[in-house]
Amino acid sequence: MADVEQAERPAADGSGAAPGYRPRATLPMAAEFRRQASRRRTQLALGFMVLLPLIILIAFQFESGDDDNGGGEFASLIEFATANGLNFTLFTLFVSASFLLVVVVALFCGDTVASEASWGSLRYLLAIPVPRSRLLAVKLVVALAYSALALLLLAGTALLIGTLRYGWGPLQSAVAAEIPAGEGLLRLLGILGYLAVVLLVVAGLAFLLSVTTDAALGAVGGAVLLWILSSILDQITALGVLRDFLPTHYSSAWLGLLSTPVQTDDIVRGSISAISYATIFWGLAFWRFTRKDVVS
Figure 1 (cartoon, one colour):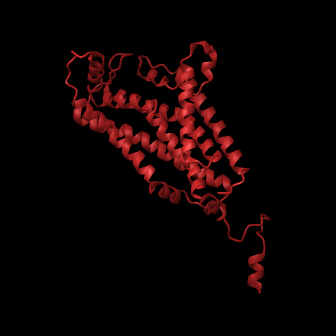
Figure 2: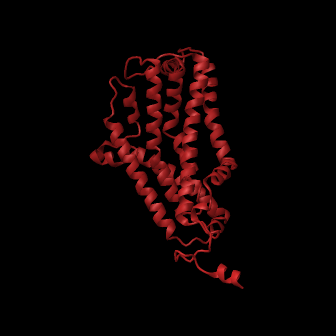
Figure 3: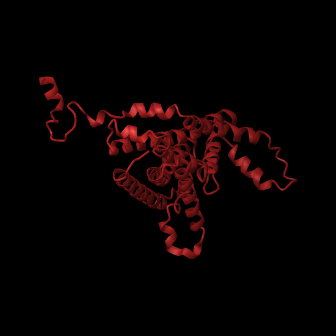
């Protein structure tokens, strides 16, 4: 009888929770990492990050170097990309930054909550009970971690196979003289860091859409489409200073890291803009989800 009374007694802190209930013990971070790692979309996305540099490398092997068919500009671009491993990595990032990386980040961050709702498992997670704020925080951290891993896999694979195929040498660009290999590697790391910061906007927008809709495809596609729309609007010079407030306006500021001396003004502005947008989107996501009536 005493045991029953003890079990029915509310927690000493007055929260009404069962004795021994610890919110931080629900939905462990490691468990969410394993759950996401076992998903097919995670495996395919990360696998493609490794495969893309190999596809580019193979495509370069079929280039004959013949300019008779008007391929002079393309041939010169290939000559630049195949100069050494650093240049090959830079080329891979350049062709991936505007769309592929946007899709991958939107996939990881837009699918994470919406997919649970579409499967009908979201309400069961909350009934464990997992506090809503903790559920969102864990899923956001894991999604960001996999997004960062995808970026590192892309750059790391490109650097590895590019160096093995084309050797190691100074970083070359069209906006500056050759940069010594050691310094060039540091600048590539800086470019990776800035791309990661810029992509936080996509992560924030996709995550907000993920808690708003039960359709994972809608969350992912919506984030990608809005990013493309912002990029299109940024090309309209008639908008004047309004373009400075678009989330994509400073997306190419990383080119300043290739100049001599390094140009960081736009990088600072772009970082502030990206972090501000991401913080707003994540704040709205938490506000929306903690007040949402979850029925799926």
